[in-house]
Length: 290
Image (cartoon, rainbow, N blue to C red; front, side, top):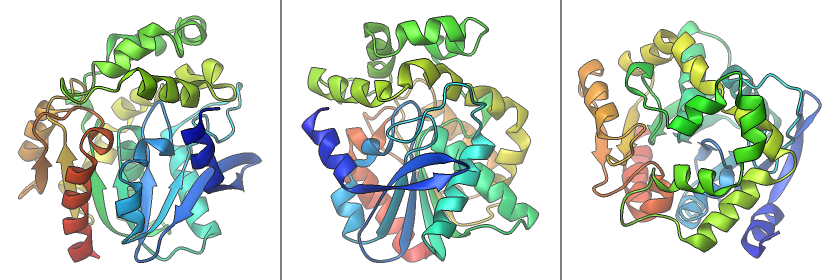
């Protein structure tokens, strides 16, 4: 394993969730901040912003089931609802009280589900404020890549193991970054190792089927944002082909007095492409919202 990933794993611990081991990292002091990572990688997505966050917050960051260093059962129905259950279970396990959220990509859907449960009055974490990065907040304007669409078809179980960690994956990932912020070859080797860790090759396409859930739960997950269940800021990389400037336009249509920060020249992974910009925008918001 690459040294940077060994160092990242050394920070973490595991807890049991429905018989599966879930990897998480907890570090720092201050208000509790839960980080919810995106697809298809893991908490290492936060490593460039981690020192700034842990200097101000008690940061909790788990790898979702089927991703990163958590268990990756091959015969399993992965779902956003289960991911939300896992994050709730981890917060209970750690005795967390008032909690702030920072979410990206798949993580924004998990955050929306947590907020939908709050709107319903379901007992859950005491979420005080949310920062959302690029992700499919509104299904009607989400633009999945060709590879994502292919993995969601009945051929996914054949194509997924063949494509995972190959040059095709590299191209699909790199095209989602800004033109001047693309990962270099060394970065891609690290990301591939995260992707393929454990049973990654055989489950990535299964985890990726969350896109279909966004269609099914579109209204449920949009309502908490439209009704502003908690203070929310959207930090967006506008050059993201999946959920960039066109997502912001839709967000402004649906959300009254939207709080939006756009990072010029940035694509789908703002926390990797412009960690200082993301931290500054998130911290300025969270320190007043808590």
